[in-house]
Structure formats: C-alpha cells, structure tokens
Length: 169
Image (cartoon, rainbow, N blue to C red):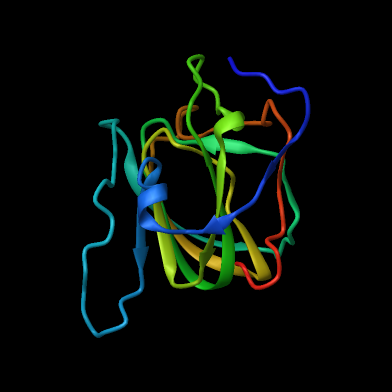
C-alpha cells in the first residue's frame, strides 16, 4: 500500500474522454438533433440485481474542496446524466493491491453541465459534488439490496481539490 505523510493537493483539469477512459465513459449532449448511444459499458455483474433510475439533487460546494469519502459499486456501473448543473467534480482513483482507493494516484476533473459520465463497475469515485448553485442528476445503476451495492470509506490519505487559477476551469 502506498503511504503519504501529508495531505494530497489535486489541481482539477477539464473533463475529457481520453484521461477519463480508465475509469469510465464520458458523453456529451449532442449539439445537433440526433439520438446517440453514449455509454459503452453499462455493467451488471449480478443475476439478481435490477436497474434502478434515481433522481438526485445536490447542494452547492466550493473549491477548494476536501474529499471526505470515496465509494465504488463493485458489480455495477453508475451513470450520471446532468439535468440542471453548471459544473461538478469527478474525483477518481485506481484500486490498491488491497482493494481500497489509491489516493496517491487519484485524479480530479471538472465536468460541465453538458457532460455526463458512466463509471465502470468497481471504479473508486467521490460522491457527486456540484458547484455554482448545486445540481440535479439522473443516476442509473443496478442494485440487489445487498451490501455489495455500494462500498464507502473515508480516504486513507487526505485529499483537497484546489481551485484552478482564474481563467482555467
């Protein structure tokens, strides 16, 4: 397990497909009138799990932001479709050999209100956090009501997401 004596400071970058690909799919609202398949891996790894569509509203947070929780859904992808949001945090981390989030290798992105995400099953991520007035999202995942629907923990290494310099967001 990697250890770090002090808090980790992450500078978020704009969300884009290539750097996010290891963690999930990025999709954007089409500019033209069209229907487009957007998520390529809607995972359900349990026979008894059923799809659940949730509606979520979150209050506004501000940068700098301290990440106090990480979660993953070991058997299900989780899709966030922004309905009413200006920007939101996408904080992800690979797994350690022991299975927890490797916060020393965590990365932070800022998504805009036209970008949706689909976390791959098992991806460690911070719970949805919106800025600039909060936000509303539709959330799709699979659940069977058991303890494996979601795993949550406090990050083993403190992580703060910095406020980008003016003009860079």
